[in-house]
Length: 139
Image 1 (cartoon, rainbow, N blue to C red):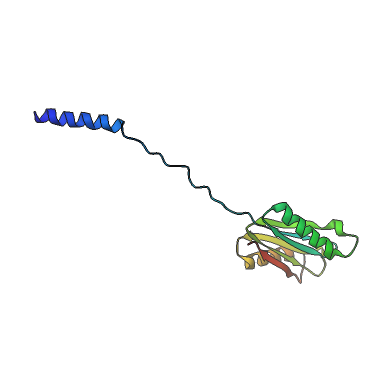
Image 2 (cartoon, helix red, strand yellow):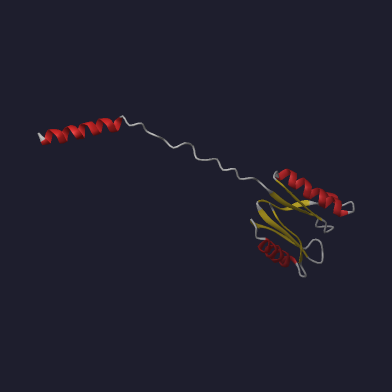
């Protein structure tokens, strides 16, 4: 009799297990990671530069290029070009005694000293007396 009771308990537990309402996890939460671009444009003929930041990469590039063109003050404005760009990064520009001697960097978010250091290192590869002229971090 005891065996029969145990067998019936097992049988009913198997049947009820199959009928349990299964709960599946909902979709994982969607992460809303805002974009924020930092861009440096530079003219290696004149030494003019511009900076742009925006949540859209093209808008940040336009702002940087416009700043560079405005700072160029000559007919070489077409030589302004984007030299550093990144999303949630720090960017830096270092320039030597001649405008064609420069270095730029973009590094992980919120580390402006590292960006400046890398820009200076890159500039020193091409010449001496380099100094940081621009350093900025995205929001």
